[in-house]
Length: 70
Image (cartoon, rainbow, N blue to C red):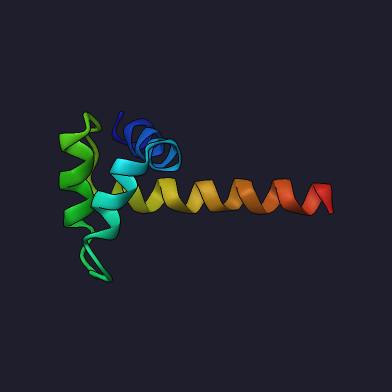
């Protein structure tokens, strides 16, 4: 369940400028805890491990899509 929520959070970041601004305000923090808190406040329950996994999957799918179109 947390992996699906992490994917939802990533999609929401693309669509919601105010959510993006909250994430950008974190700066270059190396800790993902801030993202987990922002996600929870936005209704997405996930942990750091799920966010890392969702991020990897998202970029892998983007890479595959780009390689097929080019």
